[in-house]
Length: 222
Image (cartoon, rainbow, N blue to C red):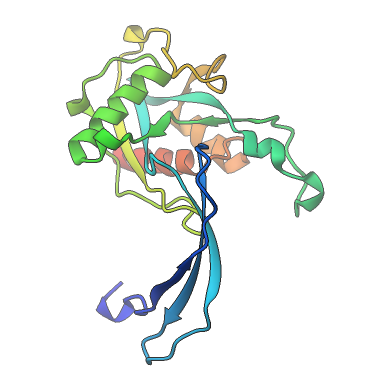
């Protein structure tokens, strides 16, 4: 892309904050009335837009890997995702997979308030690696795996920050987890990177951040 491909300069102006009271949940509904101002000087009628926010807005994604017999292996973890339970199969354009409420994912976790710096992101990745996989690796070994992305910009301003780290399978211990019911009973599996990418292509790995990180990792080893 060049300068001629720059995004149109469409500005949003806040007209009114209609958000309901914050009741202390994991997510907070943000409802605001905006007005759009266009490059030609015209202005839209006011409109209401709903989004969600949370205290820890961003997350890290970690591709932990090792090489065995000249092949790259990665670690995946099972994750329980309640919104999958809320999906109405009757509203799906294709038949729903019988996955229950779980997905296979790379380990990931929220960036806490005290970790909102480049060094803090590495510290967060190190912490999540220990909690979710059981590897004790210092933050300075966490290597960036491409730029950050917005996974769902239509509803939340969350950014994902990607890291990769080489680990020794013999050093893995039982993950400490974060104490939540959703992480209790989670499984950890090592999978050949090539097989993990094949599972993405088949639709068996359905988590978007996981597929993106796996593809970036494969490019790094290409």
